Length: 452
Ligand code: TRP
Image 1 (spheres, rainbow, N blue to C red):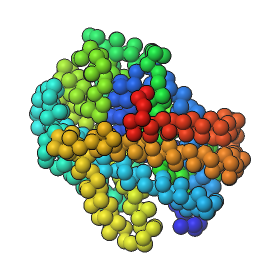
Image 2: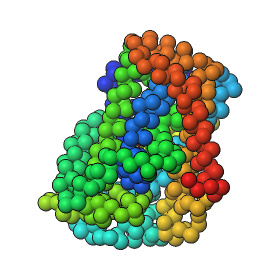
Image 3: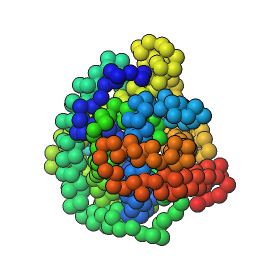
Image 4: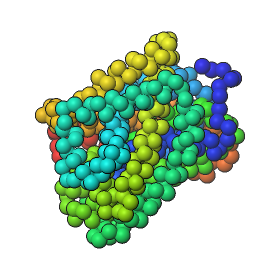
């Protein structure tokens, strides 16, 4: 793969938008609000922001710089710098394979909601038991999941990423504007102000290790870190584009959209259910249960609902396409098979891995892995176990084997690196220690040794 004809992004805007396009997806709109609601609102937001500015900044800089320095994607990048560390590249490559299937299960839920709104069942969708009924069906969630996965696979197979990118550059700004409008509307509902306070004001009594763990898992997920994506993107980045300010812009995009999604959903939870712990702790279903209720009370809500779900579907598709693309190209590189064959294989494996997640709230609801449903279990193993392991090894590699200087030099080849002290301290000391502590506590907790 090491050749001079490696294609590259045309300039800074192109790079930032492409990386932000991968980062912004269901993680921001669906996952962030339910975690924030569940883990204490303001305190979660605060922890998340601190982590984004320190860990997120350092790790994203490191990954992009690694890619740009080596001009290779994850496995090759680590191997070319140190043979022993190629394992990190391999581990990073397993993560998207675990995420892709359940990501598509959620994508299927979004598709189902879009169709419900289009076919005029918006008010049904706003009913209390609509979501619960839907995900506990024996067949329906699987059908929507396979439809969504098939669309993703077709795009990857046809390789029309360019078109998708163009469209998403138009859709993303519309999504932002629409989210702000919906958030404004949510905030005007009676009772919503309590939700705003809950979301913005940190309550330190709600702080726990789990808050940090959840926030960190979300950070990796949302910024597509620790799975080789940013290394690959960095390898396409031109030498003269400023790395530090690109990272800051990507973070701003990603965190901004997550923040607005929280404003849209959390105040509405308070308006409709009074912010009880049960309502806030809903988990993966939060967006699907709360937003249809908001749309129902809005003038022209059905149309706004349709527009909203179309845009979310798009944000999700651009992410699942790049997740699948990653897996497909790893398999092509590794086993030297045709792209189309690899695509079909990944599709079939994803169906197998995704069906348990799709059925995990109904037919297979009684099967629990470490006390979790399938979807939660896959989410947990990738975000709370594998990604921290990859992040830890990346920090050790950069901090002590490659040395931060190499990364700093790479960043400085395209301008000043203002926060290099922060970068060095985080990568060498803060990140490895915190990640390790958190990882150990999360595994112990999952195994039931103690309850945080
Ligand atoms: N960051 C994406 C989101 O917030 C999800 C995601 C995680 C992703 N890893 C990825 C997308 C890799 C594309 C590629 O929804």
